[in-house]
Amino acid sequence: MRTLVIGFARSGAAAAKLLLEEGQDVIVSDPKLDFSDPKVQALQTKGVTFTQDQDEQLLDGVDQIIKNPGIPYTIPILQAAQARNIPIKVEVALAQPYIEGDWIAVTGSNGKTTATEMIAAVLRTQTTADHDVRVAGNIGTPVSEIAKTVRPTDTLITELSSFQLMGVPDLKPKIAVITNIYASHLDYHGSREAYVAAKMNITKNQTASDYLVMNFDKAEWRDLSQQSKAQIVPFSRQGNSTAGAYLADGWLYFREEAVMPASELGVTGDHNIENALIAIAVGQLERVPISAMRKALSEFTGVKHRLQKVGTYLDRLVYNDSKATDIEATESALSGFKQPVVLLAGGLDRGDDEMRLLPALKAHVSQMVVFGETADKLVAVADAAKLPVVKTKDVQTAVPLAFEKSAPGDVILLSPAAASWDQYPNFETRGDLFIQAVQDYAAQTQSEVK
Image: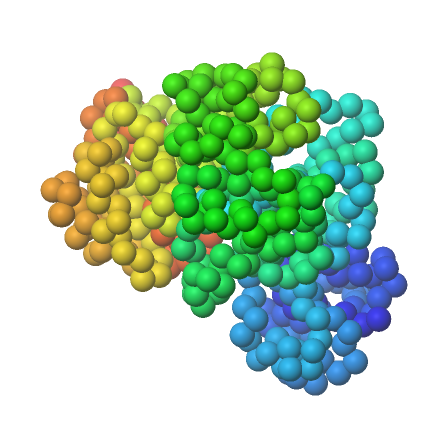
C-alpha cells in the first residue's frame, strides 16, 4: 500500500513513522521541507521518500493521503486527489485501530485544551500500575505517536480540532465532549454550517453504549445534541439542565449531588466553571469518587497561554490568555475578574465584528492597549465604551504601556480576541513574548527604584 503524507510537521513525522512500521510505501510531500532536518534524514534511511513537489503526478499509485490537519482541502493536489476518489485522512485516523482502552475525545470552539487537562487531572487520581491516563491530539502530542503504547486498560484523552475531525471518518470515542460551538475558522471551512458539521463528527459514529457530554447553555447546542445516538450527559453553568453537571447557588453538582463550591476551583472565570463541570461529568462516568474530583479541581492551576496566571508584578496581577483567538474567548476571560482590567488585545483581522466586545469591556475593563491588524477596530470599540485606549506596535511594546496605565491592585490581561498570525507564528510565541516583556519590565523598574 502506498500512502502520501502531505505536510511534515510533528503529525506528519508521526504518521510517516507509523506507516513505515506497518510496512507501507511512504512518500512525504512538503514545499517547505528541510532536507537537513535530522527527522527527515532518519526516515529517509528507513525508506521514506521525501519531496518538495506537489504536482498531480505524485498521486499516481497512491492508495490514501494523510494530510496535516491545517492544510485546506482546496489546495490543487488535494482537489485532484478528491477527483480521483483517493481517501484523505489525518494522522488520528491511523492511530484509531490501535486504541483498545477507553477513548475520550474533546472538541469545541473554546476551552477544549483546558477541559482536556482538567479531565486528565481528575482521572489521574485513579491511576494504577495497570491503568494510566494518556493525553494526545491537538494538545501537542500526535495520537499516532503514542497509539501503539496505549494499553487496553489505559484511558486515552484526545483534544481534536475541527480540522482533525474532518479527516477521521471512523472516529468512535466512548465519551465525546463538546465544550461549545461558536463561529470560528470560517476562512478554512467556508461557512458556519460546515464548521458545525465538522465539530459534530465527534459523535457521528457513537451508539447508545457511548456518551456525549454537551453544553446545554444555548438552544442551538441542545438541538445539536439530538443528532447524536449516544447517551446525552448535559452540563450547564446557567441552570438549563440538572440531568448532568451544573452550577447552582455557587456549587457544582452532578445529578443533584453536590461536588464542590465553585469558589474552591484553582482557576478563575465562568469558562473554567464550565470546564470543571465537564471534568465532573466525565469523572462521574468513569467512576471517580467525588472527594478525589474535588481535590484535583481545587489544585488545578490552569494551562499555559489559557488564562494563565503569570504572577504579581509591581502590585499588578498579570494573566496570559494568548490562546483567546476569538471574541468569545476574551469575553469569557474578562468575566472572571472583579478588579479593574487593563486589556491588551489585537491580532489577525478575520472580519469579525469587534463591537460584540462592547458589553464585556463596559463591565470589566478600565483601559485598553491594542495592536495588530485589528487595532483600529478595537480603538473604535474602546471609544464606544468610553474607555481610554492607546494603539501600539505589538505585544512587547504594549506591556510597558499597560503597567504605566494601571494602578496597584489592577489586572493586566493579555486576551487578544484574535489569532496571532499577523505578527507571530502562533499564539504560544505571542504569549511567551508577553511573559518575557512583563518580567523584563518589572525587573528593570525595580532595579531603577533601587
